[in-house]
Image 1 (cartoon, helix red, strand yellow):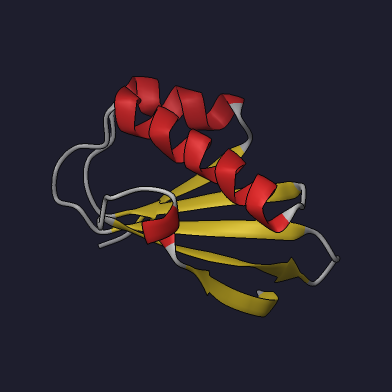
Image 2: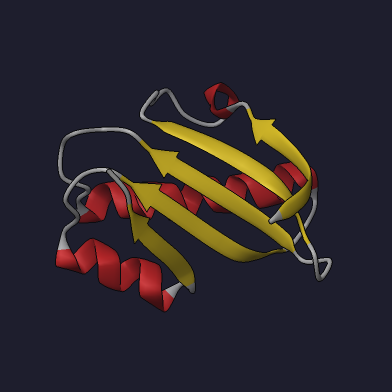
Length: 96
């Protein structure tokens, strides 16, 4: 659950329209970002690296340190992509 929730306009950072991003503060006071990916195609390693880079750009724009990162996706995901997210401390969830 996030308070001070706001939607991030990703058109400033990338041209892809497959994502939505929400930025806020959790109940413990940590900054958290939530990405939602609606694409039907498989999430590959290249796109996982782009999402991580996108998160770093958002951190610099808002001048914060994002402690919690979450990704919801509705497609298949490559095992290498999943490993990249786990190494960077992301929580990933599949939804239908």
